[in-house]
Image (cartoon, rainbow, N blue to C red; front, side):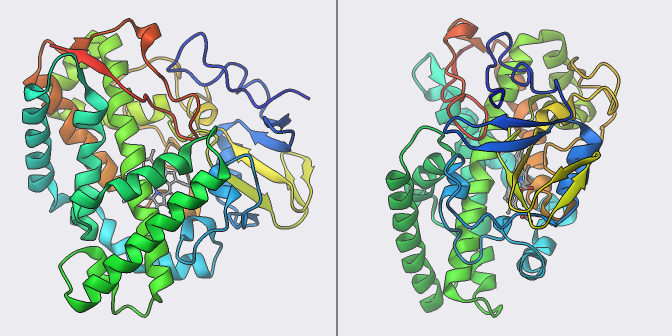
Length: 383
Ligand code: HEM
């Protein structure tokens, strides 16, 4: 049996070699478990749109950190309807395009402040530490009502949750510590409510455990992913100067560029798993109850049936129905926020620092091949 493709040796921006070789195949994970790999756009949508492919993994699946630990109550990314629907409904209205639009001035201000900090930093500067990670962290902290000064707790847990090489003990430890921190934060809020999303949820009938689970999910999902997109997207555009110039020049193109970058980079790729809750048929193949399925979002987003010239980066192309934010009932609840942050941050960066360039050869950039969600650990830049 072939291993789950993971080698991005030839091009760090392309899906791992061999990912799209077969639309549906059995592959072996690093520690010996066999799973189904789905790698065609229509099939990926079929799996993600069908809740019989359950998101309830319930811990014990050692290959993916998120699925190795028991989910906390409230972590609805790992729940099926009706529980999933109940919790998602409480939040969905908070992340609409209109709601996010109101955040624009504040996000623009945060981006400008991070650019000031970047300009003051010694050179070469690390774009991840100075710009890509702080922006979504600051935004999600403000939105939830979590003091940014206390971010170390959730940034550490986030890094452990995404790591493919860390130990389970480390992960459990940092999640426990984050849970402890949030218990204390919720108690503080009950005594003196503020104006964040978590404060608004205090009286929504959720238990404290559920509230903590929701906070863990939003804090981690809300900063790590967007941070990776900001850094990796910048790096990709630096390799394509003509495309970068278009993003810098036109606000309209900066907008279309965001979805093209999301599609092209597909940073979540095979990060999420499903479990067949019963015997199911997919593309004429029987998937047995309790077998695990993973979808390659990267292969789906480069499927020639989805769009023409799928391997070409073209920031001017109309938005394709890509699956970089997933599909179906679990499709990313924070996508409007993520899009807005990117739409503001990329052009602001390229306008403020027109001479922005990589300070090390591309081969020296530490890509996150050791993490469940792709990106770069550091990005040394000059200007
Ligand atoms: C570029 C940035 C982002 C990417 C690529 C991304 C990607 C994804 C994907 C692929 C899923 C589907 C998971 C599944 O089907 O199991 C998802 C779900 C989710 N995302 Fe995002 N995400 C991003 C940003 C955000 C932000 C900023 C937030 C927070 C506001 C967020 C919160 C969530 C939540 C809560 C879920 C679970 C939804 C559910 O289960 O119903 N994400 N995301």
